[in-house]
Image (cartoon, rainbow, N blue to C red):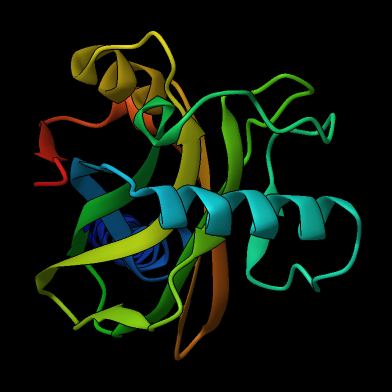
Length: 194
């Protein structure tokens, strides 16, 4: 009876270790522990560039490899440079894995016909977080029509979105949907043109 009990305990311990390793190495190697939303003002030439970029992606003249169209009706909103902002979304990441998480990229999943979000671009540089370390990644930049919104309302609007996050490690690639509203703490950085 004692041998059977010891075998049952051994099997339970092995299953627990395998479950633990599976969860932290394969299923959920990272945990998002904070988000920082940076709001950047535009100049008139910045707005011209955003409008040009949006129209060319919508019309299929630019290959949208790193850009995702979020306002799907093709109508660029009316307004001047004060009615638009560039938004960056930075995630604070706890890598719970023995493997580094590399090439962290993403895009906003919640576009619509009349979205305030015009398009988003994933980070051109590759972010990574080393094994068992905390780090940051900026997977998304977004062009946003902000006419009539305060800075606080802009942050709140951004936090209602979801990011489809991609990253790689030694075991392969991983994709997660990250609802920004579920992340705490939230920081914001408002950058105005001087």
